[in-house]
Image (cartoon, rainbow, N blue to C red; front, side, top):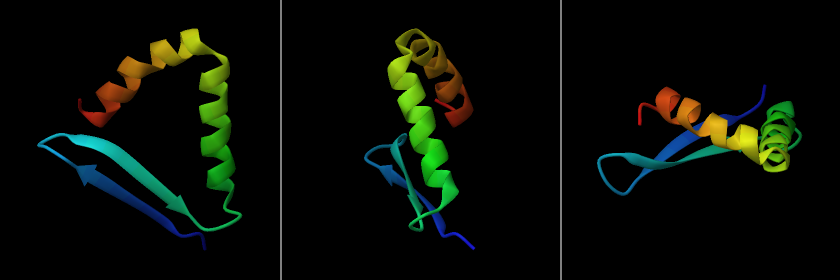
Length: 59
């Protein structure tokens, strides 16, 4: 069983960061990094993703 911890760091009334922590070797780590790398390699899609992420986060 993998360890997954999500913490929200608050500096105001709105969250500004979300931290994901995984156990070493957890496949979720690779998925998150692959998604990050994909967005870095595709900046147009990354810009289109911003409002989706904000909407899902309730921002």
